[in-house]
Structures are given as structure tokens and as C-alpha cells.
Length: 128
Length: 281
Image 1 (cartoon, each protein chain N blue to C red):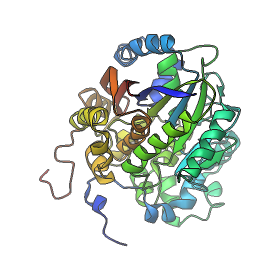
Image 2 (cartoon, rainbow over the protein chains, first blue to last red):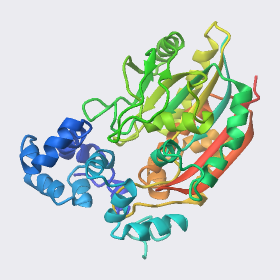
Image 3 (cartoon, chains in turn purple, orange):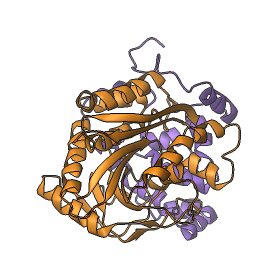
């Protein structure tokens, strides 16, 4: 693992080569949920469906627990994990709220007030 | 000869498409977003492009991680609206222009841009939301569309410099096409937004507005901005803004800004929109 300048950005995982390689099967599992029949099969037996994919146990657990940030850390990409969210009937904003640790109404209010400020969010070295 | 008469850039937020499709465009939340496009609809109805080259990114819809083309051009007859998990958007099928698209593909490749050719693709909100914003809800889209898909999902996307240069090559390629066509280039995506992780919801209107100024007036300077600046300042998904440089590159240095709009928020995202008429030779 080389040190990359974007590792300094707080609360952000850039989907680079390292993440992509780690998350290939996790993301392809998510992609499979584009098909209605697969969504049904997954919902009927989540563990059984996941076991058809050569994912790590940690990745499977993150999916089962709907640990949205955990999936990203384990190589998930947000556009792929969003398909799991859609399968659960969640809106993007609901998932964004969960990832940032607030309720959906709090998150929506933050967005209406102009969004999350970049001040204090540029660098891990910045005073927060 | 075909010529590029104008460039349009706009965000392509999926929730905008959903609001329109579900009859919510008059709601207090959405009204100001759609109002920013009132002028644009009148303008494009007057200007009547024959073809739009629509620069967008696919969001893990047509392209999974199996194939990740950096630049891909649609050469198909038509493109169906994609089912992104909640059924396809109720919008018309997008009609392509395979004659011009193949011409562009050949010219661009000969001009050192190694384009991937697309013969079959369903198009997601990245392509259909800009059409809805500009044309409303017609029975049929009033012009042909050539999709130009740019990878901005797998890091790194193409550099700003490369995007600007591709725009310039598109201009040369269009101008070498014998048919008398009025062509517009749409650059889509952005503006500041981050959809993932604890920093989700990031918006940076100062960065966005500086981007709009510099893109119009000094595209070379904007093209030199490195990816890390977009990610840090405009959020991990704000990197989509590099696609606007393709639109800008397709226009000459002299442009007239006929419309500019900026609004926060649409769901998780800052909405930005520009219309630039080409006034150069």
C-alpha cells in the first residue's frame, strides 16, 4: 500500500485500484441486484445468496449487517452498494444519513441549509 | 459542414428525474431547481439542435467492473432508458446518429484518442436527466443524441487536460463532417457532492462558482486543476466536473454565456447549469 494524497481527506474512501481489487466480488454481487429475480433470491435467503459469491467473510458480514461504511472500507463502491440500498427500499439520502451518522431528517436539514461545509473537512490534519 | 453552435452543462442528479417523473416538479423543494431551466427550454426550442453529443458517466448501470472504458462513444441506432433498480424512467427511447457517431469515432481515434465503441447500451439518469431538464417531457426527444461515456467511477478518471483536449478533437471531427448539421455538446455531472462515507453531503459553493467562472473564461487554467483538488474541495463525486471540460473544449475560445444557474440542494448535490454560445470563427 502506497501513501496517496487523498488518504488525508477525512471521511472519504477514493475508489482506486487497491479498493477496486479488494471489492471486485462485493461490487459484482451488488450489480447482480439489478435483476428483479436476483433481488428476490437474495431477499429470500441473504446468507445463501452471498455464499454463491467469492467474497470475504468480512464483506459478507458487512452486507448482512448493512454496515454501509464498512462495505466501502472493504472495497465497495457507492454506486454499487446503492443497488443494495435500493433492494432494501432505501433512498440515497437515507443511506447518506446512515453513513454520516445522523438521522435522515437531520441530514435533509443539513442539505437544505447548504450542505456539509468543507471547512474542517479538507484534511485530517485540519483542526476540526 | 456540421458545426458546433453551443455548449450546455448541467448536473444530472437522479432525484431530479424522479421528481419530474412523479409529478413533484411543482413542489416547494423542486420548484427552484426546475425554474433554473425555464430559460433553457425556451432557448433550446429556438436553437433546435440536430444532434447533441452528450457527455455523461454511467453509474454502474451499463458498465460494471468487468469493463471500465475511460472514453466510450455510442454508435448505436437507439438507446433504451435503463432500469436502475426501480424500473426504467418513463422517458422516450434515445435516438442515436450512427453516421455521425462512427465518423466521430474514426476521426477521434485517428486524432490519437483511443475511443471505445458502444453498439448496445441502456442509458441511465446520467444521460436522461439532462435531456429532461432541457427538453421537458415530450413524446419524443426532438433531436438525435450521441452518448459519450466517461469513466469517473474508478479512480483515476481522465485528467482535466485530457478532457479539454478531447473536446477540441471533437470540434475538429464535427467540422470535418460534410452534412450540414447543427451540433451541441452537453457536459454533465457535478457540481460539488459526496455520496459516500462520513463526509457525505459535502457542498462547496465557493469552489463551484469559481469553477463556473474559470471554465468559461480560462479553460486552460481549469484543465490544469488536479483531481485531488476536486475530491478535497468538491467531494468524491464532485470529480464528475472534469466532464464539463469536454464541452468547453468543443467550443472556441470566444463564447457568450447566455445562461448560468446555481442552486443547493437537489437531494445530496449542488446543481449547476451553463449555456454557452459559440461566437468564434
